[in-house]
Image 1 (cartoon, rainbow, N blue to C red):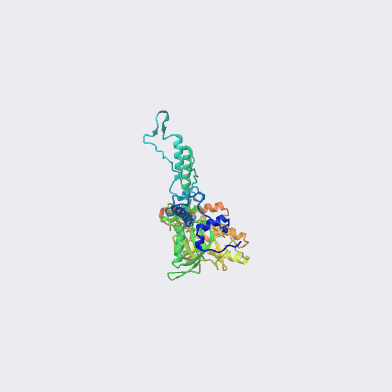
Image 2 (tube, rainbow, N blue to C red; image 1 turned 90 degrees about the vertical axis):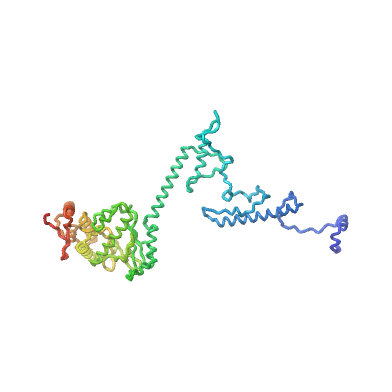
Length: 486
């Protein structure tokens, strides 16, 4: 059936509409659209004001959703969050039952833990009369107060979430938790302070790190590459040298950072408190200053050895407890210790005679005893033995100087005898050769007894006259024992 076209006036005519309705001509069906109207069938849409409010509410919802998204993005994982609540469009007609509008306690100004009617204890300490009297010591009242006080614990203490629950905590349990929280806070503070103020095995504390940065900024060092050795007293770093006050700095340097903790080397004071060079400045009350004194002691010992021509690292600069020296090695590879070096029998024999000569030079020319000489503190580089780690080195006039020399001789003699050097002297012969003394004994106990007697005699002589029995001779010969009677 064809429908004849009509004008707009005919379409708007009510009479034409009635005629079409009476004839039963259906209207052409309108295609279904997926329009999601926000209003419900029950909503009253006869008022223009209501329609405007509904549209405004929908706009406010979209705005608040976008604001929440921006707030989460801005705060991220930060423990301190910033709320955008003041910028939200809170609409009076918003339906609070909607799942999209659940209250986020972190974003509201209302405290869910706050009681509806806060209870206060009057000055007299109780409420009620007769049998209904309730004091401030009531079990339930104290229990609720203890639960409220747990919010004052440190942030790292997890106290849980008790919204909407009437929880009580006894005084005994609360006091135990409080003591535990206080103890944990102090322990955490001690660990943090120790970490900040001590040099660890492979790391440095902030003050030491700042000193290292200053050396780089001043041009003394080009860069610091990393740690390649650790010990009981220091951490050793490799660095590239720069320039310092028109002084040539080696291309490869070593930063010896002395540890600021005495845990691993607790007996270091016996090496320094009786050394007359540092005796007046020694203080057992300030460990950090003792470490600086220890670094200064190594610098002076290395300088004395360098002047005598003994192969050892060359001192570049000393900054507090950081000693910069030349690097014994090549291309970032440190020279091997004598213990780890692979030497032929000829090289081992050559190394023995070098060590023997260096020990004599150290004792006679430098007036020093290494006090920790072993295959671990000698390097093999370019066919030469090098002495390192002389921070504990002392002078022979030290109250225990000869004992330390005997210990060094025992370490050296034992190593080279095990290495198969037939020419190696035994410990007694080596001690007499290095020191120039003539102690006749093949028994270690008797030998040590004579050494201790010499040290005791020297100490008594010093206390009486202020003079040392062991004195250097002008002709370069070894120190001789003064046998003159007082």
